[in-house]
Length: 259
Figure 1 (spheres, rainbow, N blue to C red):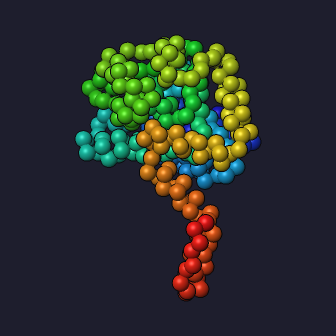
Figure 2: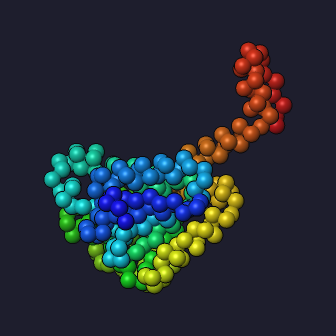
Figure 3: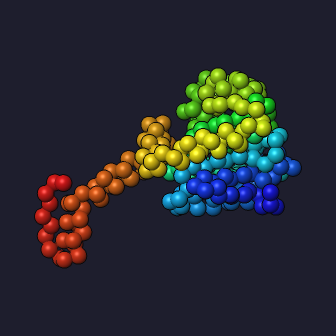
């Protein structure tokens, strides 16, 4: 593992992104958010990447949230501009990637770390991992969609339990609630994540990506751009679209035939 705060590794047509701050339990900093954004943009633009795995370094934590030393001294408006809004921008990019994303949860996922995990499409976790939204215990609130995307995932009642009680869920509780999809032994985690990613990568990539976008739209995730993007792509494939472009170039009235 390098000294970089995050690491992107290509394995054939798969991509593995690792939060690489093991000594700090992979807590998130502004620099890490910037790197995650760069990775998301690169992945989305790469036609050869068919599936993505997001994980953390070490075996203690996937990510236990935002580094409190990075935001505790911020003024309220800077907290909004530089931290809450920024995190939303980056996590939304991850949630809206074309490719399927698997979170390989190698340890505890608390606060912002849990919010990052639920930006993935599939979550596979070790049987020692625990989950929590502990923000109220430090006089703040979930800031990176723990009160929004989480509700769409497991419902309002379960989200209230996590966010208001501050209780930690075990792996089995998270599995029963639908927060994670599979629980495995720690030494089997990456092998299982890679096997599932490779299975996804073997399928027709465009169909897989379109299916993900359809489900995203159904849950309210980026609905507008999903619908308009699909409609625009369909329209662009028609003979009328070719006629429209040609008539514009040739400076003549278009003759449309409805197909």
